[in-house]
Image (cartoon, rainbow, N blue to C red):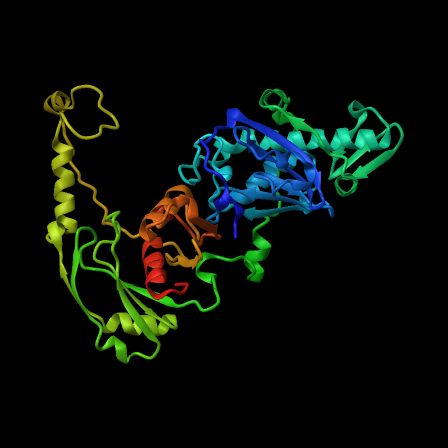
Length: 437
């Protein structure tokens, strides 16, 4: 169980109110930001450090970067590792990545939430990850200087090794971590004052390196949301109404579905967010049986206020809004277009339209929900863990602090996985049948 769900409530803190902690423990060197207000003072002791926000260095020298961004094939996890490695001075072969849970400590340092989109990730995390790497390098250097009995200013860090050219002494990151001599801490001001490399000094950034997620994706060990398998897990197939928003289920006849082997239950969603109105989930012991049961359900709907909505009506409304000169959102409004058309020698008119298209990521939309005591665990690849966790909590009727989001690799996103509509049926079905769904 992720321990963050048991922490005492305290006011959220932003990056400027955090201290950067560096220390060594039996499990290795860990680096990250820890909230100053109300911090458990036991964390100040290296032997009690928890895994870092940003990265950790194990006794064998392996550097594991925790990525708080959703990786949907854009390799942002490797990018975060590359930024850290640049300032840390580590060898790329020693780098590893893991995906973060929805613990607030993994929030974007600029946005204050876990969200991936808009091509923001590198831009908004570059400085924080760079300073994390640089702080680690300084901590390793000072520890090595003390062990080797040489001035820290004469040491060189390269390829996961701290060396002293004059004496030809050197120590690997692994050796320094094993020594347990790393106790360096940084105040926020000290962290901000660290001089980072200039672009002309880069040896890692701007260089093509093997992406860290490629081997596990090739050999099948990388886990996507759809790969999740839990003990006793059941499967759900969603039946949606003919109208996307506003429909209500009037009745569900599951008499035929009950003849399907392995059929458990038909769950009508009670979603207060309005994102899954009119949805019914057929739950069974296998996905194949869930599909058969879903096809066998006889559902009647009240299609609600959007019953007559169509692609044509949406297009007509778009044209109506486009014709308004005093309302709507203008991207460009410069000059008097009416006058320009009126005085033009020739006017060419053309209309371009596109149909409404599905995002269609290669991995189907999915989520798995499991209740363990008072904790709700969600397994899925999602682009907005902060919001999604809250929606999942609402669907379960619990406090968001009792929701643990297990981030998986995403088989494509395109913005579609910013939403939480897949979480709601998984949560409510799991709650209804008392097993993971």
